[in-house]
Image (cartoon, rainbow, N blue to C red; front, top):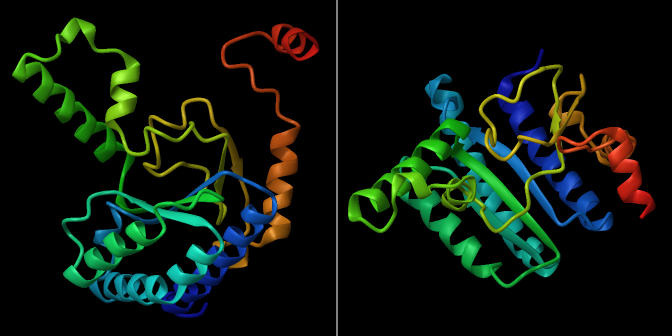
Length: 221
């Protein structure tokens, strides 16, 4: 029952804890949904606070991320952000571009439908230019036009707060991702809860269209 602003500030601490835990557990990539394209619908005071929090957090954290060999990347439509945030995003990406210990992707003003739409526009332009024929479009072409085409599809999706939906997050990329839902609120999320999610994931059988018997045969080969 505290003001939402406090929840957002505490959520930043959770980000720090989870990033550190992922580094310790040698997880290669982590994508965090920081601000969706639909979040502009929230009260203007809350949106302003989130954007200010974004700016202050980047200023405070980018050097520590760099020292820990973390590459920081952003996906989403940046044009709507104020100039100072736009500049900080660009500078933080440039500063950490050579780091390889963890790919930390921040989805900001992002939506899965937007991602697929902008990919379709790219392919439509190639068709209009004559460099691509409609019948030659493959799923790989769509994937390569999306955000983060160089990263593997997510293995595990974690949704906090008791919600049971993916809320327009990485719609294309989550096709075969294991979905883990927890009632724990994001500001309460810590390394222990991450380990519980990882343990749950470790007991999943990922079949990708095959039968369970086929998967076991491949493991035993």
